[in-house]
Amino acid sequence: MGLDFTVVPGHLDIILLGCAWTIGIALAAALLSFFGGIVFAVIALYAPWIIRQPFRLLEWVFMGTPLLLQLFLIYFGLVQIGIDLPAFVAGIIGLGLHFAVYNSELIQTAILSVDKGQMEAARTVGLSRGQALRKVVIPQAVRDVIPPIGNNMIALLKDSALVSVIGVSELTLSAQRAIGATYRPFEFYLVAALFYYVINLGMEAVQRRIERRIAISR
Amino acid sequence: MSDKSHFVEIRHAQKSYGPLEVLKDISLNVERGQIVAIIGPSGSGKSTLLRAINELDSLTGGEVWLDGVQVNKDMPHRQYEKHINQMRQHIGMVFQHFNLFPHMTARENVTMAPMLLKGLSKTEADTLAEEQLDKVGMLDRIDYYPSRLSGGQKQRVAIARALAMKPKLMLFDEATSALDPELVDEVNMVMKTLAEEHMTMIIVTHEMDFAASVCDRVLFMDQGVVVEEGPPSVVFKNPTKDRTREFLRKHLAGAN
Image (cartoon, rainbow over all chains, first blue to last red; front, top):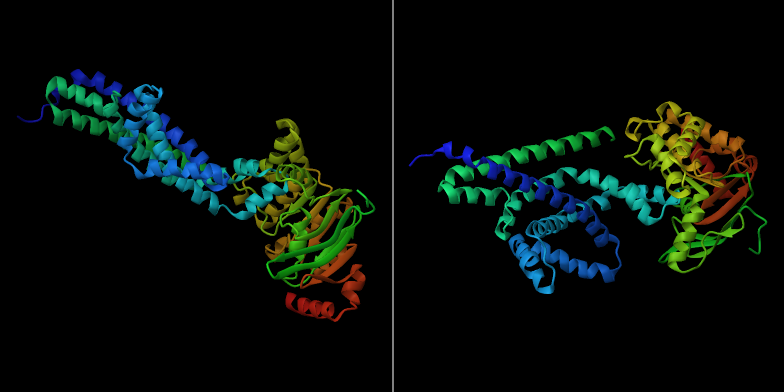
């Protein structure tokens, strides 16, 4: 039995819908991980001890345990304490926080490497430390980490396949559904792989555009 | 507010890092519109003294007063932060390495603080930026990012940024030391203009000629103390202390 791609067009609608879900979830999780990463970085560097310590525990949980387990915890575990999230929301939160922790590491290093004179100059005109961070230090730090954050975002896109296990009909689960109907795993997994690749290309293009815009202001 | 007789008043400033005493009981009064130069070898404490005026470095002892208000007041942390942010709006500072914000254009460098802290509208802030950048001769580069400016141009924008807050006092921390020799004059010209407008200025500098030409008073510092103080004609031409003489001889010989 050879490969037969003629079965694909009949199920392309499910696959495309799956693509839309994957893009939507990845995009939302990417935004959450980006802004969450900034917030986490500021907490890790500047928050008082009493906030920083519990936060460290959270950080350890997200870095030291499998993402799959985290998704189970958020989707199945939180129900027990009365938080019943829709699967796709649980997926976005899980992916977003998981990668926020990784982004936070990058942003922390970048914040610390912004020239000390920048904070001084901002404080000298009368800005508070918070204002100086927000207006002067963090924007510069973020610029420096766009390329490595872009790498994290590609990892995030690939890991978004994991949310299929909590029942979100994203690309991977959609491919599985098509396979269930046709018994053609090789064809549909290949098609799914192709779509992941295309989405990735799109993300890389966006990243390049952002990098180019930043380069102008340097 | 017991003593409001001087515009800027530093009383018994003392600063130490552990056992190392970098400022030893320094007192200094500056009147409104006066220009004071602080000279001295590196490590003499002159930058530390300047940075203590706006609390970039805090003193371990002594007081700093500006226009009848104590800058380094002793108060609870939160309250102090508010107070010092307020005070700093009145004290402009220019750094050796410019410290322009590289992600902002010249215009944005100038308008950021006035918009954020004084609530200026975009149009008001733009007018202000044009005014201040024109004053330092940088109006034609208003929408340039710092990366496209020369050192002298960057420093002029940095001065405009400080002036935009309408400070009562300007501090210059070796404003021309990092510049190529041919770019020093354009910055000095701007500082001269400020002098003519009677801006109160305290200038840490290595440029004796410039200090001699614009300053009302010169302080020579060494090892954390003021060794000699007086009008430039005296300190530069007829210093009374051996250490001052030695420094000037070395410095003027080394400068060329």
